[in-house]
Image (tube, rainbow, N blue to C red):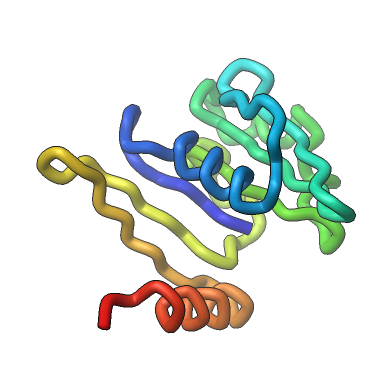
Length: 129
């Protein structure tokens, strides 16, 4: 599970689109700001893209019934996780995006063993020499 944090316009949805394209999604990828969740079935993977920006209270997550979607057979990417408070499961990786000059800065923090392994792999593949 990924948590994506950052102010409006920092690129959270753009990052999700890039991830989905890298996984082979060729269809329309839209922001779930109003629907709250979009499902993408990629091969045998169910990837849920959540956007909790419109939540006014963390209990809206409970009443929406999303808990059952956060299971071992699914991957979840959550924009604005802080709007659900401490009700969400802990992410594998927490991503904080910020505008920096003309670009963006991403700070990735592992929050689980799986997240730490993924970050090590990503750093070994994509770090500058």
